[in-house]
Image (cartoon, rainbow, N blue to C red; front, side, top):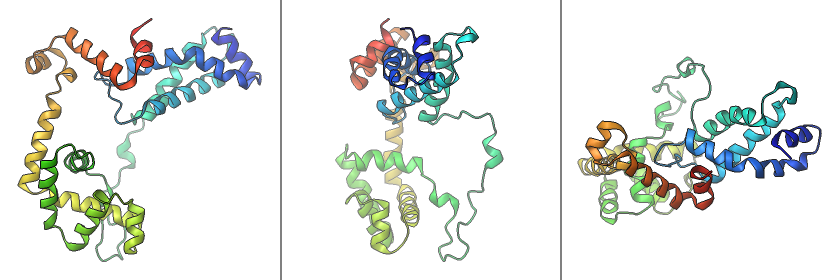
Amino acid sequence: MTNEELASKIKSGETELLITLWEQVQKLVIKIIFQRYLPRDGSTNKVELDDLLQAGFIGMMNAVRDFNPSSGFQFNTYLDKHLANTVREALGIRTSKRDPLLDALSMDKPLDKNEDSNPTLADTMQDKKSRYVYDDLIEKLSDQEDCRVILEQSKQLRPMEQEIFYERFLAGLTLRAIGEKHGFTRERAHQIVNKSLRNIRKSKAIQLIAKEYLIDRKTNFYARKGLKGFKTSFSSVVEDSVLRREIIRIRFGELVYKSVFEE
C-alpha cells in the first residue's frame, strides 16, 4: 500500500498499520533529519540517534493526524512539515516566532530573599565554559595531566565546596544524593557545584587548559566551510564531504549512512 493509503486506514482506526507506515518512511525520515537539521560534521548536539528517530516517529503520527486525502497533497508533504517541528524540538532549536526576550528574567534576581547565601538565578544556570574545562576533561578522564591540574586547583575551594566537588565528579553522586547527605535540596547542591566550577575556572592554569581545548575544537577542519575555512584547514569541499560521510558511518552505522547518502 502507498503511504497515502496507509495514512487513510490509520485515521479510520487501523492503528496497527502505524508500524508498517513507519517502516516505509523511516529511510526518508533519516535522510531529511541528517541533510536538513544536523550540522555538516554529523554531530547531534549530544542527542542520541534513538531520540531523533523517536522525534521522527512523532512527526509521522502528527502527519497522519493532519493528513487529508482530498487535499491533493501527498503524505510526505505533511510528514516534511511536521518533522520540521519535532526534530527541531529534539535538537533544542527554537520553533516559536515569539521573542524569547519577552519572557526573560534578570540573572541577578535573588531566588530566596530569606536565605543567608542569597543565591541568584545565575547560580542555577549551567556554566558552559566550566563544562568545557571540567566535564570533558574530568568526567571522561581523557587527559590525566589536565585532571591532575584541575584537582590541584580544587584545593582552593572552601571545605564544603571541595567536598561536594569531589562527591559530584569523583564519587559520581547525583545532585539529589548530595543534597540528602548534607541536608539541603537538589537545587542547592546544583548551585554549589556550579559555583565551585566558576571559582576553579578563574585560575590561570585552568584558563590555559581551556584555551588549548578550544583551539583543538576550532581546528576540526571538517567543520570549516568556504574560503575562510579553506585558508584555515587547507581542505577542499570534496575532502570535507568525504570526512563527513565517514563520521556519520562510524558514529551512526550503515543504516543511517545508506539512508542519507544512497538512493
